[in-house]
Length: 283
Image 1 (cartoon, rainbow, N blue to C red):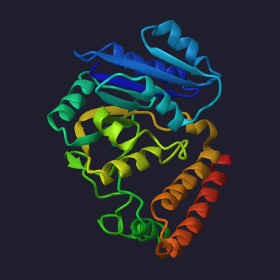
Image 2 (image 1 turned 45 degrees about the horizontal axis):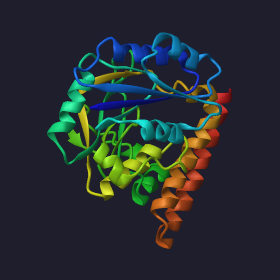
Image 3 (image 1 turned 120 degrees about the vertical axis):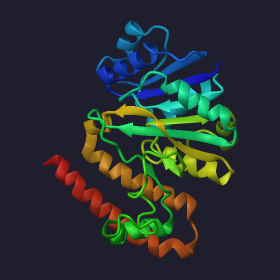
Image 4 (image 1 turned 90 degrees about the vertical axis):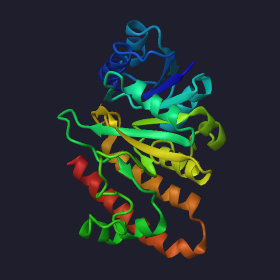
């Protein structure tokens, strides 16, 4: 098997069916499999997949296992040499899978690959970031990244200066479409389930880079991404979960006491921002 596509779904039935249609209507010319992990959706997602795409391998959980554990479930039963973690709210272009896998096969030093994500109106989504290092988190917390968005120092985390038309080695492309080699996955390990929703792919990319794997952004594959369709259902809660993921990442990878002052500044700024976002989304 060349490619295993793992899709974790929660209550996005119609978008999930559209994503599956974009795969099966223009399949790659190599052997592939699709593994759908449904996290106890209440909108009939699992039943719809069984009816419309019986060729897909469906794992229907009886509870919401979260994004990280759901992906790990799919990865553990996968058989492909390449492993695509794919969100259900996307539409793949014809030959997109072919192009992405060909890039990976030509570069055995690449452990993971992200692609150009666009909105339905084809405007570009800013989907590439740097790792949240102590300094980059600090620049975010004190607002220097917003004052100097073109600075590669102050804007190191959100990378607002990044050119989405050029191929580049990057830190962490958004996990919406993250193509990994099995060799890298076996070397780095599965997603860390301590990050159930956010930052699990950031943590995986960080560990991959530490082990010497390259991560590449490929602009020649353009994927339509509707964006946050599951998390919008509980958007106020997700504002808190996103900040919790960031701080958990910081605690895991930057435990030294020397980083503690930056951590507390970042924590205070993050929780304040989460509170403001959650109030705005409830309004």
